[in-house]
Length: 306
Image (cartoon, rainbow, N blue to C red; front, top):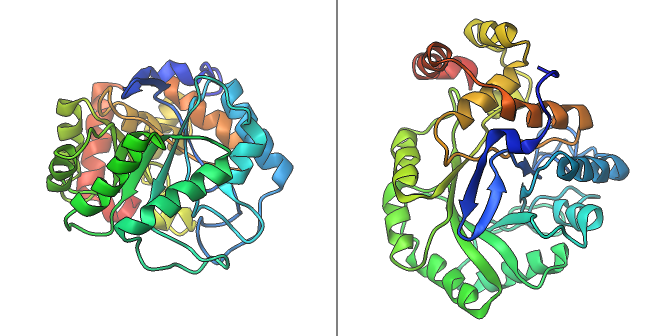
């Protein structure tokens, strides 16, 4: 797989509102620490290595980065690392962040933000990233409940110029419709991957395509079990990887990207070698038969590969 081009542009481009991004992006959740992200395994990544990963990502053509103010470990903040590594930011770099969840200084999870608290969360991201406005802010939801009050609060901040575009995370189709009645939605982030799909995932995926909204899967590579190193890859997946001289992780990314031209990938890592492998997956093309085989694998044996 290393013989494929390493340019993030190999996966193609998509537009987030008026912003064009390469479909192969980078997620900052795993950047701050070794072990599982947002867990008690809090050995920090080496700061210089994390900075080098971010700079190398940009060199490889990554111009879409996903982050959040609550992505931090005791000694590292994803937003601070992005600011240090890439500021002043390249003109074509799009930074997407999210609000809704909150964490205290010690990492303890706080109650979900109320509408009046979202301004503070937006301002926290602005301070950490060193920006005057945020390119894209996703409202992260915690259940299938009304979004109008929360999304309406973000729409007001958008009108003030603090936010350029709005998106949603962890949502159902009816929540997308409710939000779009308030303000434009440029992206939806939901759990999606081989064996990592909610019951309505295909509906959300297709709905986003019909509406011209970017669909941005999280856990496209590492679901809860695999991230902990507890689950082996399925033989069918390793067979496809072997046929392409690729890793199973690269095949997972390629499968995800081939779900539609509106699908963006945001794999994250603090390892420079893994970064290059992930970006290279944007050039991998699976056959129709391989796609069907992997899709069937996810439907029939999701518990084995989740």
